[in-house]
Image (cartoon, rainbow over all chains, first blue to last red; front, side, top):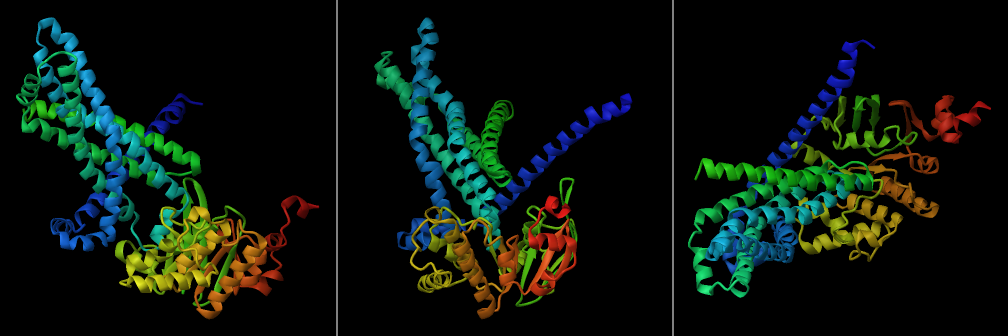
Length: 287
Length: 247
């Protein structure tokens, strides 16, 4: 074999194939995301909101098939995640208080523990930890469910019955997580602060009023809002990747396992990367 | 009428369809036979637009399925009902909800009408009174019949059957064959059946087409296929493997 052939066979060809697969992945998930958001915006949100504020129209809402799909997912991905998020946030808040006490006590600055816990939770740990926990719980479940539907031809069956699979499967999940992840993040923020409070007040001897003052004092509405913005981005990542992996599943039970693993791994990486990017953006560009 | 014109389809570098030409007339039952993995199911999926051909056309009643998308494709698909190999029932829904799925999605029918239609369709496939069960509680043969009831609910003009008798015991298979015959005789629906079960094929077919190496090798009535002189078709309908043929 000539050296030129060697280079083209062993180096360029795999490189090209890898690059093609990479761009096919980006293109595929991008198209799915585009279709999902298109479907999301064509839903009758105005009418649903009107129904929600008028109790005598609740029956109409309860009979709406599209709304029921979303409500069902909101319960599955959101409400059922509360216990897990509670535990994660509570212990993170407690650990945060203890670890900062270890440092701050050396400078007799224990009073700042409250501020440190509040800011770390709302700006960073609340959104990121919640997103990671939800990826493991919800992202994996979505991929496994859609993947199984794909390999048992249920998605094909949907299409043959004249129903758009993206509108029927991806859109409700995206809507549900876009609504519920920010709610979960606010909940995590509060529980985390509670965890810090328990350690700070009952273990480290800071007075309750002092701790609460130090919690609320440095906290700006912007800190919470950037956290919620991140939550929306993470929700898009989790559902987008989970649905794409589910739809693209091939090859029976093994394929479902493989795409579920991939879904969680890719979501984790993208969440951490996006978090770093947006933190930097908020720090340098919109201080 | 369904016309397949010069269809080509490759998966990766593996060609599956290599110039398929076939016309299916209104009201007939066309059985497509061929070895496992020769692309029969792929052919069926092209007819309903689940797969797009690399080249060629699929034309249903003068409209091209292979180029259609969005609303047009959805409208065209409602002419079809499809029975999948593994039934492909939605396992999160009950049997009744499965059967009523397309009615609830596409028709303004009121709940009592829908319930009546569920009972009618399940009665048709001989499974009355199982509306409340989940697909996981049914046997393979029952699932297939529920799949058929789901396909029938919207009164399609064409039904595509992907291996309707595979994985069903002989008596169950016979029940499914009778069902297909009844749909053909009474409701005058066009049937396209993909199978490698020759007993079933000879029982239900108006015409049989043999798919071999990506092309239609021969099309004819049951008698014509039985008395064929084509060695490949003969080998398939007699069910002899290469080795025995060589002896």
